[in-house]
Length: 458
Image (cartoon, rainbow, N blue to C red; front, side, top):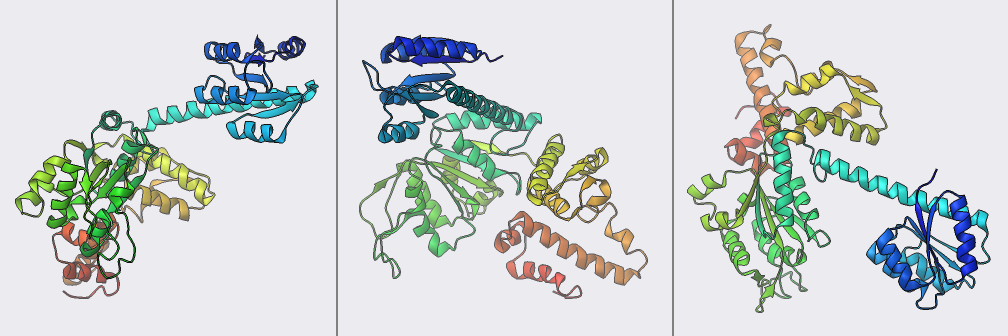
């Protein structure tokens, strides 16, 4: 039987009596008020599941009362009742969030359906919110999956940061660990969540354009500046700006960034007047900034200023408990995308746990997507991983060849697979991949050419 509570607000005693009789007959608990002010007080005290609200009340407009109820959240659903339905009233009420609009004299069969539907809709909304809360508790925020102690501690720290007033945060971690997701989690759990979230990859934009992108420019500041343009800092005003791959920012721009962080105001290129900007700055990197400071390619004062609060993401190999949960999450997501019905066997998940995952969560995600896209459906087994994560090394596969030929093929295969893996971790950015590999761009290109000519020399 229903146990929901309905509040009736109507100045006609006979209408209230007939509504109470019917609602109680339908199994609901009923409370009532004859005008707006006591109705609001009852709603605040009792938090009814549904309000049956007359549009015409002696002390207030039902439309105004509806607006107050929706703002306060003291009623989950409201059905408006009137003997003289006006089109403008109906449109306004529905715009303000009324569930339905019924006329007098009341058709109780119609009203019963409207009441049941309204209460069912509120129940479903409550269940959805409850499930969302449970998902946040179990998996963190914004698809940050983690049940391990390390991730639980990290997500707790992220929650503290998000609710704090810290305006400069440094997020560090290997490629593929989810630095972008952590940045979004911080933004969308903060008081800035309704304001812009602006992201820029410092290694993806040429140095000559980066200053204008960040700080904006006035009309005529340079040849193609035909109109004033706000920079990304201004676009993020009130919200959050994430500078990904901050280690790739030039020393000159680091100086301007430091000045902005200190003063919280900027001048557009070609501009004179300072512009004040309030935004939270999140910087992410997979580089060793301390080493870059020693090499003279990163300003020490900027490092300490940005790292007032530092978040360090653990690599996937340091939280193996999360691997099955991540794999299951990706498998479910990609099964829906590709219209498949797939599950992993216990041996499949054991095989995943035996891997080191140098590309971290991104690598695991890519493997799960490829498996889902190519598998006909059913149950995934360790054998399905052979192409992505071969169990036997290439040396065993080349043992039938002469030493010299085997060595050449092994080295060619290693160079190509190594270069491709580094490039994948760097999201296809050649410059970043070459730096991570410790070689120049030309040498890195040569390694990648192995896929076209396995015998190509340096």
